[in-house]
Image (tube, rainbow, N blue to C red; front, side, top):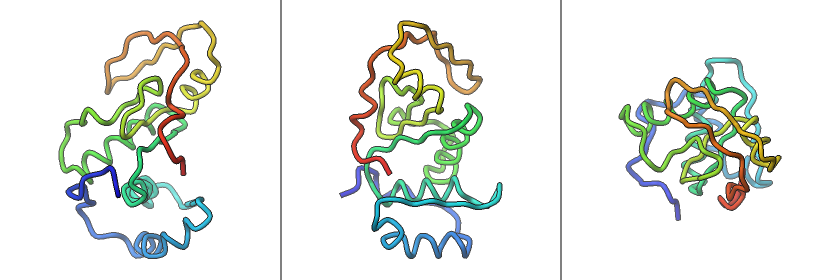
Amino acid sequence: MSVFSDRIQFKYPWRSYQKRVLDALDEHLSDEHLHVIAPPGSGKTVLGLEVMLRIGTPTLILAPTIAIRNQWIQRFCELFLQEDNEPDWITCSIHEPKLITVATYQSLHAACDNKKEELIVVDYTHEYDVIERKKSNFLNLGKVV
């Protein structure tokens, strides 16, 4: 049973190559791995979001930069929720995971480091304070694909 509402759906038709991947998703995930390699702008983020919905478990999405991290959230809200407002069950805080947690590689490294240094996140989309590094429960999210 999925933790996501049935009302959350992609609002456009799938591109032919995206549809092929989704039609064969069970086969692709038979070893619990999925690797998508495609050029920029080909719809990898949207495909990844649909795969997340089909797997139906709390999800940790890791991105290389804050801009890409924000892109995942923006695409999900715009293309699946059909709204601009970010729901409270999506977070960028790896220290306080929610249904969807979107973080950078750097924040994962910082959380695993467990040093008493401070992590400063500069973000123009979300408001953050200085977050003290602490032990995190982000690994308790469930199945990671």
